Image 1 (cartoon, rainbow, N blue to C red):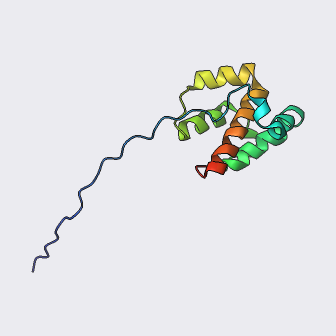
Image 2 (image 1 turned 180 degrees about the vertical axis):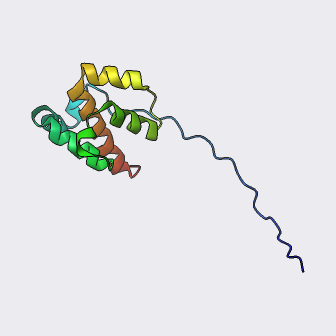
Length: 111
């Protein structure tokens, strides 16, 4: 006896995720003084907080790989080269921007 199954739902193609932007600018320290102070005086601690937020190894928080992973995950335009140059020229600002963005996305419920 053959069993007959009727297909009632066709597979759908999902649209690519919408491009987004960083929630704050690279030099926008005034938007969150706590993050800015922590990044200035305890850079390693802030890097570990970022890594913990992203479920990664503590010492990876301030790395090019972490920034690249983040902007790829949230479809923020950029490249490994721009991440490298940003971290090379503005390491404190880049890490603070990443932490501010994580905090804002947590507030919005999209992290």
